[in-house]
Amino acid sequence: MKHIVFELTGEMAMWRNPYESMGAFSSIGPAPSNIAGLIGAALGLASPRSHASSGPDMEKLEKMERNGLPWPVSEELLRWEEENDFHVACRWTGGFPKRMPWNVNGHKEVRFTGDTLRIQQQVIQNPSYEVAVRITNDKTADELAHSLKNPAFRLYLGASFCPAIIRTVSLQKEIPPRNNWACVREDLGFGEVTPFFRHIVNPDKTFERLRADGYWLYSTPEQGGESRNDPFVKGYIRQEGS
Image (cartoon, rainbow, N blue to C red; front, side):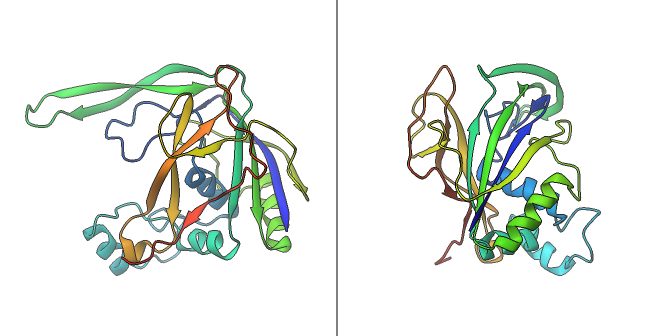
């Protein structure tokens, strides 16, 4: 078993809550599903609806869309997450977090009135993170480390106008002993939190692509986190009984 540890930075980040209708305010950091998506892009695992996808099953896509799943995740990525028992840890390393207004997010129609509302996005300025990924297969870990250094597709910090920069990719037996890795909470509480979204690896059975079980609390200079012996969280869900 190996750990892939890397720095993730950029000029700005936009980590949206997928279930927040306006989508104008960025959480401080990525959810496990965001990190999985970044890994999928690095490995070249294209979404079924992207131009890079090779021969999507249109009948299956149409069925999933009819059942309320318009943006399916790459089946290859979902298999990769489950087969490699994808676990992840992340921490904020950017000092005091700052948000800034960025552009205008088009317009939204206000229901029942016919009016429109212009939305200004609030992005994270100069975000910086340390990410650690734990997977069971050493060969796959080596391949992932190579792909993070030489990504197949462009990498973004949550949105296409937020290019990602990855630095100092390393393979380690153990992750660095930090006391400020993000930790899971069931309630919102205080501090900078990100909804704890993870990919559902059997979306064809549940007709959901994501599930949020609480919040991922990020430690910052303003708000400390909780010290955990094992900061890794399981990065995916197989939802049974649906």
